[in-house]
Length: 394
Image (tube, rainbow, N blue to C red; front, top):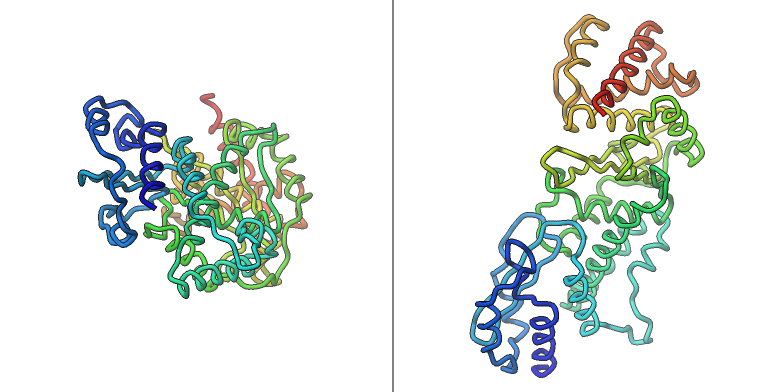
């Protein structure tokens, strides 16, 4: 009601200094704006809900992580958009205060807790069904409050997840079961702009897009899946010889999601999320699904293939490019030129997998029976040289 709205607005102005949020240097004080705010009568009747819903002030069509729109009693309007991951402290404080005003309970007084129900889902299909139900109820009731709160809970969970990734000494995190499902959803809704396939503005749109993507691409488990012990053994062996991952992940951690389902198109995916920096740097997430079929290849080979994509991206600073030295090398080895393109990164990742299987005598994982031993040994020599070259400057 109007008194509560006025109280909320005063708190936002005086405690959170919301009027500064759209300044370029973020939260910097502007005396002229402050003087104008002090002159306002903040106890005027609050705007109607329809006025706010029908506002067309937020028009940015790129991926917005949070936005605030205000209209003051003298007609002045303020719109703030952010594309950065996570919520700043004052924005998070505002979110929790708003959540107090918009808390809903079921008739049986059991609060709806999306995160609790999400962590009870065994696979992505169950998580999709949970979201479909939530979105359907919102459509039937005409009330998007629970959808909005659910999306904000996910953003907060993602922010906390990013912070916790810097704790401890381990160079990678493995998430399985329901934790992997939620992690996959979080990654989907906060994709970096360079990897954005959503082109939507609202959290509701992103959640709906997630349910559509899972429905079209995810099926129950079919082939084999890699175990946690196989992941540990593989990374430990490579790092003991090359110190590859301990050097790459000093400040950032590798995230590995063991998905309890099968992707129709892929056995696995390496998601390289570009970090804000003048020099291209990436945060890596590996999604390891059950194989598409019984002939998908050993899960360890599939894992090695994705680790190859990490090396390729670190060397070239691009997920789409392979080193020029690799193009020249393969032309000598296979007798025909290899060019940059969609196939080149996959060829590089397989070459890395073959090299590691030769280095550590992992013949039981090798699906490339038709490739000559001399070629595999040549890839081993090349990858030894490339990894050494990568860290030569440091």
